Image (cartoon, rainbow, N blue to C red; front, top):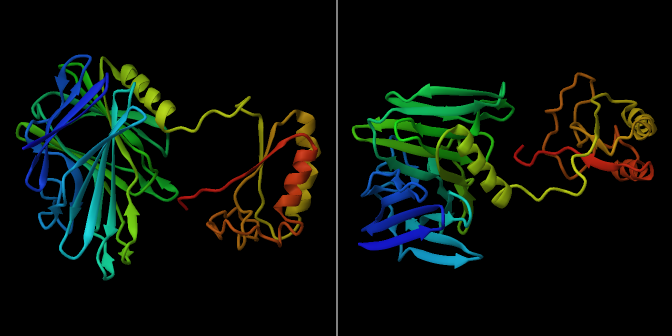
Amino acid sequence: MDSIILHNSRITVALSRDGNRLLAQSVTNLATGFNWVASGTPLGPSLSQGGDPADGMETSFTLAGQPLLKTASDAEHLFVAWTRPDGLTLDWTLTSFPGVSVVAFGASLRNSGEELLTTPPSFGPLSIRLRDGTAPYKVHWVTRYDYRKHEATLDRAFTLRGGEWNRPDSAGWFVLENTHAQEILFVGIEWESYWQMSLERQDSQVLLHYTLEHVRHDLPPNATLAAPRVFLGVSHGDLDDALRDLHDYLRMYVMAPKLPHTPWVAYDIWGTEAEGVEEGILAEIPFAADLGVELFYVDASWYDGSCKNGSGDWFTGVGNWQQEDRVKYPRGLASLSHQVHQAGMRFGLWFCPQM
């Protein structure tokens, strides 16, 4: 077996190759020496053509070549690829970041063949088996429809979903707390909707899957479909300790740098009527500037084809980011932006790329 070790000062991930599989030997919190995984069990992406995944991967895939470990900017990156006979390739990455107790997983499907392929209905960046399957575990998570934290004791199985577009369910973060050892595993997906996380006790182990839902696509030759990144972190103590470690990772490696002099005082306005939208917004500019507003923000329903019956329906036309609605904004948004700047404010415009 070939050994592969990714580590920094906070967390170590040790794997080995066994034929077409990668086996986890340890995922260790270096502050305490606590190992989270069941040694010698599969660790990798999750993919299935239907039914339950087979140890995290379909058996029709072959590990292509030797896993490649690179170091760049003090981060360590593991690159692995599995290929199916028809040319469907699953690329998988594992990254260790300096200074934080977090590793991240990425996965993408690639058509390396010559024919059009359809992606499997379920795939994701992470399938892992945790040890101490009989230990007392608590699950903590947050729901986005009411922004409340919940907790439950892990019995046989547990599932979280992100929900659908504009029908939110859980936030893409949860904590698994080993209350006996005071060890915490926190996991998150850097995406909003159409994902599923499942935990299932299996004898002395807990199987953890993170997969995407409703992802079936046609892949032309050389096309790629990437999954959002999933991160996994370790902490010791309580939930607040885990949140501090989570925030360290997000601030250092996920969030954009803070803009100067933020947060700004913002003024938000929109319109779904067919007439008078631009005139109404122009009339608000001096009023907002006189209040001391710093960011004048035009919300949804500015795009071409948007609702014009005054109902507040901002869904209509959503996604037409290339053109503003010239019925509502006959002078165009650039003219509106110019007048906002002339009044001494910044100009903001709503859009949502995943829609």
